[in-house]
Length: 591
Ligand code: F6R
Image (cartoon, rainbow, N blue to C red; front, side, top):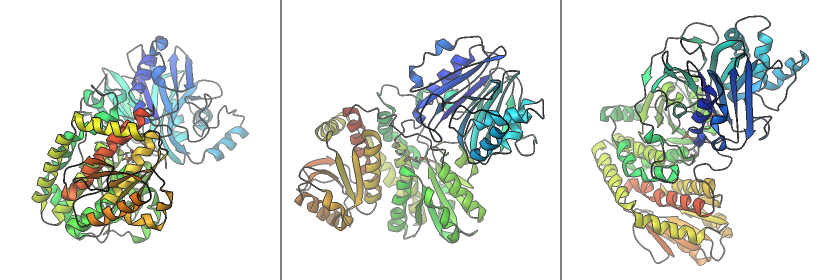
């Protein structure tokens, strides 16, 4: 979601550095940007709406060793220059950037206004510098004033603050990620995500919820926000390369990440077998297993309901993370919650974990981002090892998540090796499928349907969640109205939408529901639909056939790939940037 980056240390190009670093977080999605540089005892602040990629960072070359910057994704207050961060105190000595939402901001704002503070924006964030300013009336220490202010906030925050009279960078977090990079030698970088500072350091320390950090670039102190007690930290070296996080030869991250599925599925399958067996045992013994995730990760959970049922005869319950709140009635200390998240920072998922933990239930996380909050807060974690996913639209993370679920389902059925073999074979088939001819074919199809306003996708069994996922992919990057249905539901309503030439995609496998889904496809065709079949075999009902290999229980992994490619080309043909869809963010750290 919003990006945060700050630096303090021996370098004298801090303003330029934080702007360049934020450009590496562009994939998170945002609508405005801003920077505050401490120059002598003044703050130079610049902010605007629009893309930070167009900002010439060399214009921030003043001698500066302490700076903070932000890219904002609007929550409270519209997309305006005034609402962009940083926000300042009345006297202009304090600058703050913030991710998250301060839920009691209206009450705090009224209190501060009554004391004479004047506000310039509609944001919740602006109360932070004003409250720190107010706290500084009772302490000389800037960090203590920040701590006292934080102790009055309700909600979620990851914030950076600086003061004109102090060469320190202060950061605090509750609910929104912040990671510290660097060493005494390099100075310290604090960002909402690692790629911001990967050009400078690979040494990181994670700030946990309820903690703050104060650094002057040479020394660093982590403390508990509430008690002020010191929190010792461990320096960790990150192992992934910056190249892995960059586009390479591809025009867009989305395309690169689709193509990476040639290897990423195999990496997801390569799990510690003993751990998989232990987790399968935990599911077997749990009195109720619940799966939660959001958006695409939620669709992996929905598909997993079918994997567990068909492969292992085990009933599990899926709920979108944002709908999990009322499930607390079903939770006990013997329940198991499985959460799925690419970023490991999704607020709704963290909330679901909190609910489960309050009931004493255990939490297993299936995540991509190692060291993320969800990864660290879960009782057990499995990493899908897909490598950094930067396009807003999730692709390789989804297939990795489903691969891990299939593996666990086979382990639960005491057939782990059979599952592993199936998935490795599927990985190899996907490798063959992703060839230039295949891509060209789908590009041509995108060319043909790019001007259509509506598109419908049907599936059955584990291809039903993939129909819904197909709709998400097409909506978010191409902005075509797309909807995914269970094939059997068509005749209960949606079939009324079909007109002559409406493009409809049928996701088909070779299994016990093939005849049913083909019957549904015939129903579409009879109403004039232009039918695109994604299937291992060609059937007469298809106007266009996107051939996929036969995948058995891994069919959904295979079937979703041509749709990811189609969504990508639809976006490109319609002149949209598939990596940065409007209104969306990569990491959704607000509820
Ligand atoms: C869609 C997409 C989103 C995410 C969702 C959860 O392409 O990427 O629907 O899947 O926001 O994000 P994570 O997996 O990071 O929890």
